[in-house]
Image (cartoon, rainbow, N blue to C red; front, side, top):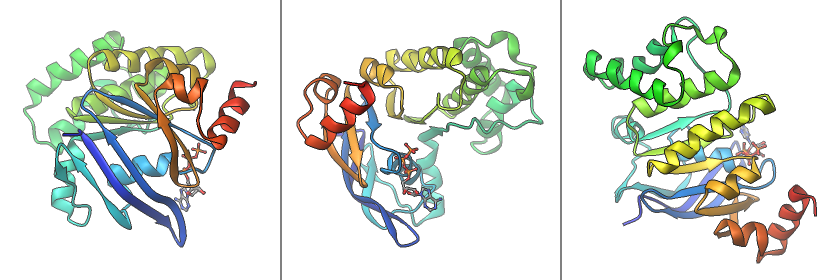
Length: 245
Ligand SMILES: Nc1ncnc2c1ncn2[C@@H]1O[C@H](COP(=O)(O)OP(=O)(O)OP(=O)(O)O)[C@@H](O)[C@H]1O
């Protein structure tokens, strides 16, 4: 059974169709990246999966269970299993790093505070921030803030992590440290759905890459296919433009 199974997903903003029938199946522990031109619907797909934008048609099933986007209660249960990290880290400026990571598991998931604290400390150590537990977001670099955001998402114990251009707001010299963190998650067998403009990273970390254009997956395959021997003319044009050949 696929870990995440998307069938015929349609989404609209106002009257514009932004996702036009997406079919995508992701296995447990698989890493799938979405690439494609600006406006092709990549971020929207992550937003719909995570329940931030209701689908107009189609289904998303998580471990065989169809997510009911119309029912807030059941959506919240599903959302606990699907954490999303955005380009903008959205940390709480009035809380230190440790509190930022702990707040949702304690207040929303109602988990035991001491247990969550131990997990939060372990996660922050894992992303290289053991010495920043008491720092406030504005005392951290962009890369450090993004790593806090990733630790915060992981502390929710998601089954699947959705990463939406997590390096786009970072200075070039900070990109590597966040990508290293993501590679660590990959090594831990986390199921990941990634939107990224870092093609070197996508190529290195992904099991499969989906090329999106006009709200559709135009081509999907292993990185060697998408970047090396793309089958569709549109994929070819996109890849040769971004790789500069
Ligand atoms: N909140 C919104 N309201 C209306 N239209 C939106 C909204 N967000 C996105 N769109 C439109 O939906 C389309 C898809 O946007 P989306 O952000 O999913 O693209 P993307 O592939 O992630 O692009 P990029 O690579 O530039 O981030 C675009 O045409 C965009 O203008």
